Image (cartoon, rainbow, N blue to C red):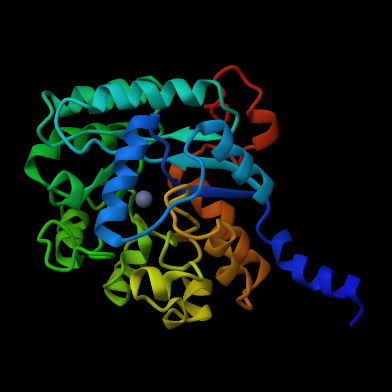
Amino acid sequence: MSPSNDRAAAEAPETAFRPAIDAHTHLFPERLAAAIRRSLSAEADWEFSHPVTRPAIEDVLHAAGVAAYVALPYAHEAGLARELNTWLCEQAASSDMLIPFATVHPDDEDVAAVVRDAFEAGARGLKIHCPVQECRPADSRLEPALEVVAAYDRPITYHGGTAPMFEDNSYVGFDAFAELVDSYPALRVCCAHMGTYEVEAFLDLARDHDSVYLDTTFAMSTSAPETMGFDPSSIADETFVELSESIMYGSDFPNIPYPYRNERAGLLARDLPQETMRDLFYRTAIDYLGLESEPDLETAAETDSGQLGL
Ligand SMILES: [Zn+2]
C-alpha cells in the first residue's frame, strides 16, 4: 500500500462519523469548570488538558465533524440551578452548535418552576447526576420536575450507573434506574456511560423499552480499560446493530483525560453497517432529543433561535 493509500485507509472511517451529534458534553462557567476538574482529579487521579471555554470546545468538536453538541450542566447543591441554566442558555444563544440541557437540584425551592423556566429559556432536556446530587433517578423530591419534563415531552440524561467510582452508592445502579422506568414508562431517559458497570442489565432494559437510551460516553472510548476498568470489546458489534436506535454517541468532552478522538476511534474501527453508524453518531440523538425533523444543522444554526430551528 502506498503512503497515500495508507492515509486514505486511516481517514476512511472518519467519514462515517460526520456529521455527528455529541449527546454528552460539559460546559460550565470557568471557575466552576476548574472546581469540577479539581474534584475529578482528586478522586480519579485524572489529568485534563482540553480547553473549557465554549469557543475552544467548539473548535475541537467542529474540527472532528460534530455538527451539534448537548451540554449537560449539574448543580451540586441547592440554589445554583437557575443561574447555571440561565448561563448555559445564554451561551447557546450565541452558538450555532450548542444544545443546552437544564439542571435542577432535588433540594431546590420549586423544582418544577426551575425546570419549566429553563425549558422556556431554550433548554432542550434535563440532566440529573445521581451520585453528585445525592438522589435516586425517581427521587420523590424530583417528581414535580419529572412531571414538567413529561408535559414538555423532553428527555432526561442521568448519570445513573455505578461507574467509575460509585459501586457502593445507593443512588445509582440498575435497580434504581429500573424503578424510574417503571414509574415513568413514557419518559425518554438515557443512562450515560452505557450503564457501566451493569451493562448487560441496562442493554436488556433498552431492549424492553423504546424510551430507554444509553450513551457511549467514556465507556466505549479506547481509553476505557485504563480510565474506568471497562473493556469496550465486551459489547459485541451485533449489540450495536440490534440496539442502534437506543444507543447514541457521547464523549464527556472536555473532561476526559485523553484525546477527543479516542471517544469515537473504537466505534469507527468496528465492522458496523453504515446505517448503524448513522444511528449511533447522529439519528438516535435526533430521536432522543425530540427534534421534529432531521435538521439541516448548518442552515438551522442560522435561524433566530440559534437552536436547531426549535
Ligand atoms: Zn458527563
